[in-house]
Each structure stands twice: as C-alpha cells, then as structure tokens.
Image (tube, rainbow, N blue to C red; front, side, top):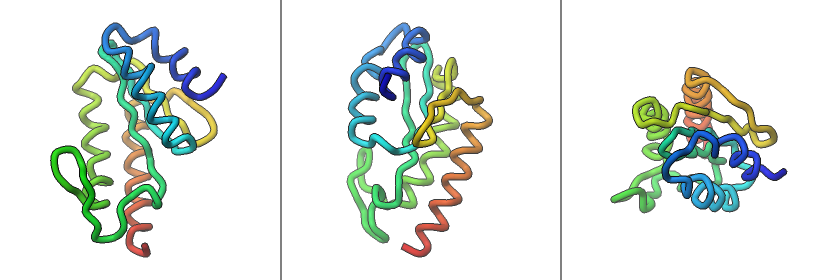
Amino acid sequence: MNLHQELVKRSLPFIEDYQKDLLVHDKNHLDKFPDRPFLHFTGSTGTHIITLFFLEDYPKKYEQVPYLFGKADRDHILNELTSVVECMNRCNRMDLILYFDGKKLNEISYETAKLKVAEYTRKMKRTFIYH
C-alpha cells in the first residue's frame, strides 16, 4: 500500500463532504512532494495537509514569490504554519491527525501537531540564517 492509499484508508471514513480534498488534491500534493514530512488533518468536511518543506523548497533569501493573493518571502511562508495549525482546531479538521516523518505515517494528538510545527519552524529559522 502506498502512502496515499494509506491516507485514504485511514481518513476517508471520517469525511462526509469534500472527499475530493483527499482523493485528488492530497494525492496531487503527495505526488509533487513525495518524501516531504507532513501533518494531515481530517474532519467531516475534508482534509488539510501541511507540508514541512525542505530548505530547497523555499524561496531564496530576500526573494518574493506568488503566495495566496499576493507575494511572500520564505519567512512569511514559514511563519504561516503556526497559524494554519491553530486554525485546524476551529475548522472541523480534528477527527484524525496524522504525521508523516518521511518514512512512516502515525496518528498524533493536536498538541503533538503544534509541537511538531513549533520544532520545525525553529529549525528552519536557524537554517535560514545561514542560507
């Protein structure tokens, strides 16, 4: 069973609406970034995936790239992750939270998800200083 198939097996039973989030959008994202760690939030109204990108996935220092409805640099993009995780608690994506560490998919708590993002953000900020 590949990673997306495992996500579908574990997440689909919770989703009543917007199954396309899982079946199409998440699959396309995993195909594009196959070895990146991520957090995956599932609720009755769909899913949300938060990828913990590698340094090479971020814009270069001082570079602005198209982002949502404008442009952003890598610090802005990185800092958004904390807000997105906090939002999951308010937008019906708390039935199942999974973490993929690059090798294995595990169910985690919301508190652990917040800690994973905080740890990742600190690590990337330190990395950005030197690159």
